[in-house]
Length: 545
Image 1 (cartoon, one colour):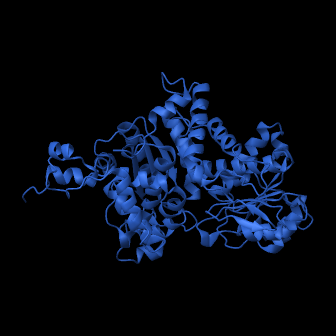
Image 2: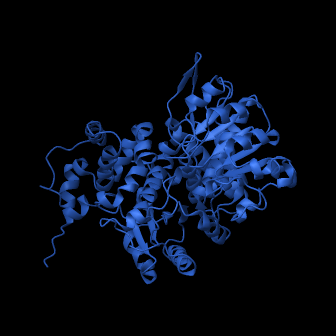
């Protein structure tokens, strides 16, 4: 077969260097692009204006995301320049909640893989070659990897979940400024237990049930070892692994190399930051709070652990701190003798002897009546679970109830802020896992903070990369949470407990700097890295021609 690729086509099909109509006449001459483009040379702003006008003609939701992905696949500079100008509008489209619909339809609408690496449990011998091919000689500093067993609140989506890794990386660049040429999305295809996918002739992944046990962990380890060999400076970000594997994998590698699990650690950071922001407003102490986590899976347990650790840091004895936590899952309140507990859950279960009606604590309302929580965080994926009865019962026993319904996408949220504000007569301090408009109530405008990991993981990851930190440890994560929780204005009526997405780039830089500084202070930074602000500024990429 004759070679059909030319220098011009190579350049125009490379999203990292393509400028489209932005190539100057001199560049066109030098690069062999004469005749490959229309005559007019456009500025980046002219391209952005034209592209945004086209974007506005698309139907809302998935069609808009597909259009933006076409730009992403063609010209990374233009895409991120445009996203920077419309960050609030684009975030829900390129990431949560629209990304859930994109994942569900990934195989049907697949066009090109956005330079992701697809690693199969059936071909472990191909792992290193696959990573090399996908990287294509690029200096990879950040990898987001998923096996897609626990995508958002929608479950197991097999290879379709590649989109969550791509979406996370888009936010990393838009928020923190990591060079898009230095990132890589990775799919660990271990099969899927989603029968809908297995029965779908268009499904693009391995068509068998999920592989578990040694063979699965061998794939994970092959990926980790190959990544460390090929990309020794890269941070490995694990995303949406199932609850039986997420913490196991994190614990295996976290002390030896820079790894981060967003579902365990990122969710914990954002919940702690939100609680700290809420307590700044209520003028209360964390030591005086009772925490109810509704949904005791990977995210719920990450939240409980982060909040517990903060209580201990603030002087509460460990045994006493654990008495402040109540886990509620599908069985109701989790007790010491509840069957099927994970190691993480066992740390926070209660004794039946504490309650005269222990056998009746099988639903959220009965538990709220029994324990009178002051903080209730939902990761249950049960839409509408925070009912009026539940919220009013909680609010009857605390002046400023802190309620975070953070399940996503939108169809799975436990309650909407407007209802929480109404049911508590404006006393609630709330944040959600999805973007929500301001709420007007009795003359006050309530700004709703977004307790979404996108507010924190870009800064954590970028700070680690900028510092060249050897690991990502709890001290760095705590620094990130305090930085984020301290940004809110506690004296503004209706103030949000977390900063707005409109300032995402600004506060991500703040988080990155404190994480990098923590690494420096602990002696974990790379040789020669002594100034966190300089390290972050030096690494930061900005979209320009």
